[in-house]
Length: 190
View 1 (cartoon, rainbow, N blue to C red):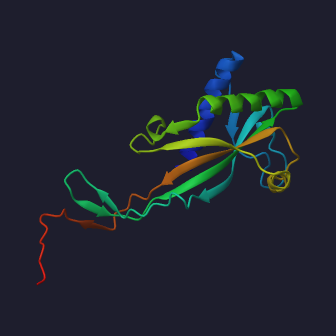
View 2 (view 1 turned 180 degrees about the vertical axis):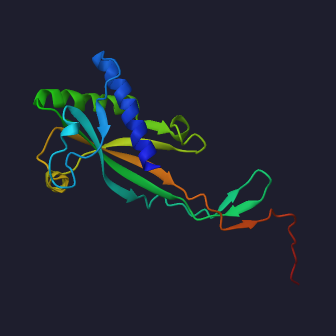
View 3 (view 1 turned 60 degrees about the vertical axis):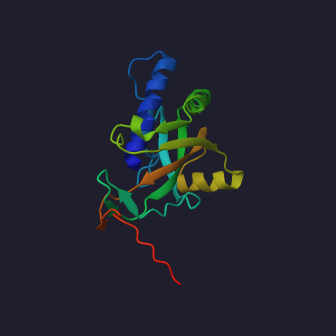
């Protein structure tokens, strides 16, 4: 599901960038990593905005405790509670020219200013789910930023971080079934 969301964000950003630049179907935003696993630079992402997931965090505030899922016939399925996540996404202007990178990062900010949330129903592959993903800019301290770029294995480039809130992961496996309540018996104690 995370991959579906990342691909959707990249696709929508590419549409937006093509309109802004007046270009024909160019890939501006690409999910990936600046560095290859062997520590060398990923040259295939040069002159692109690189979209990377830098953290996945369970959202404990909106933690679900629901263990039943109701069917239309009234029967309930016993299921594990869904996991709600916050994704931390970095958008890196990987361009040779500093001012070009700043322009592309400004476009990312403008995009999320105009589209601060996506309904699951608008994301191909998630149409049947309820809920939405809300994007808010995340501003790390200089120390956190230093650690992040060290973990990325690269030198600082113009970038912006966003927190994508309440991504819901649900395993569809049913552990049992609970029939609907047919009657309620109340006994009085005298």
